[in-house]
Length: 584
Image 1 (tube, helix red, strand yellow):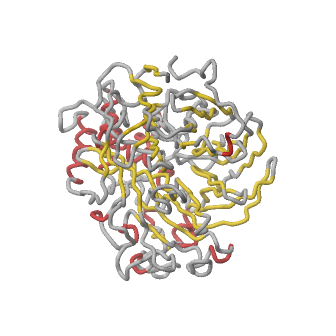
Image 2: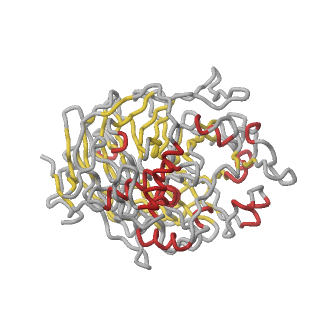
Image 3: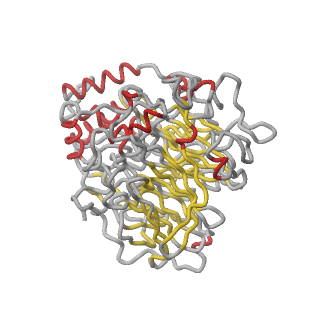
């Protein structure tokens, strides 16, 4: 038998459950009503009552800012103006929280039950659930958990740090874990890291690598490589002068400067070092149509493999509003207004395909996924030629928002603050396709989440097909999980999805801390809500990540199959006693 706890409603998932979802194989995302969406958010913000008469109970303009800021600072990166639907969704979540419900998703996307407690722990375990274990780390915790299908903890690892995001169980049974470095001076966005640690199965620290300074900071995700190295995402600091000289419009340039992303490959040098053996910088692959006298001038539509430095618009917020958001926990306690515009791309996921020697990235500020070439030398990675695929470090493929490179408009947008792009492994149904979590699809006065599977268009030589003057395909996903109650399934930040060997998909709705497994037809066969939180705090008393009231938030949850080499010869019985849970 699994265990279920009923915990206080604040910061947790909605009550009630539905055991099915919809599968959409050729969706056309409807954009009608965007103006109405923003009107609903504005009405909620200004009056405290939405257009259905529901009282929000939030400070006037704060509710409307929750998504615009939380999606930037907490991981989804929705730019102001373009993602008014996300603002409405966050405002609606704020209203639900204030009225005794809770933000985010319920089991299969259920309706909110006002007041009362919220059920956490194991909610559903059927014979069709994939055998194995689930690995996760709550964002406010220093503990990583491995649970069985009954929702019982069978192993834990403890660190001196909160996580930065992802955790991986290596084939030797060691845990690879990004960590939140305290005292970061420059970089104030969500997903802050700065440190990577490796712990043995028994918790001994065997590698501790820091990459945190005023010039650069690891953040969000890491990816182990077959050769024992790993890929990591990092911000690098550029001054306002450097940004303007690269063609960033003055009205989009924070005086604090900007933080474009880079990807580095690290060769561990245990016990406490690392050597960077390969790197890619987004800054080397820009295009701008602002000033023909500056480098990289050109129309983005004519340079679809390059990144428009003016493609994302930062949210607007005044200092008073920022202080209120800090008090609510939706942005870091030391954030400044300019910090919200400094994070140019907010890359939140990195994945690797060894067969193709390619890297996939998720860039939610532009609402796109990208693929770049890893076969390049350092010089080729900084150029537009060379490497196995001939384009140097320019983008091989991009998908989700053709408007970001001038080959579409809002009606063509398919991704909204997405997370966790990855290739489906060989031997699994859909092998070679891309899978990702789409956080904030506009719907009426709110937004909802989906899981998307793509089949990138590839020619006979294995190259991604780019039409002469059109966007990269496909026009629609090959498969998409859409919840039955759309507005009941929404994680405004973090989250992920993993394909399983039987064709099912494990979904992590990260903000409410809910993990569930669905069949290809969308039926839920396993459902769990994380009952574990944490009390890790920074030196100033703030939380390590701006999760707001999502106190059970989990960056990502992954399935560990029974035959995984990491588990060989290990006893995996439920711990007795079980670790304490939040609220008990």
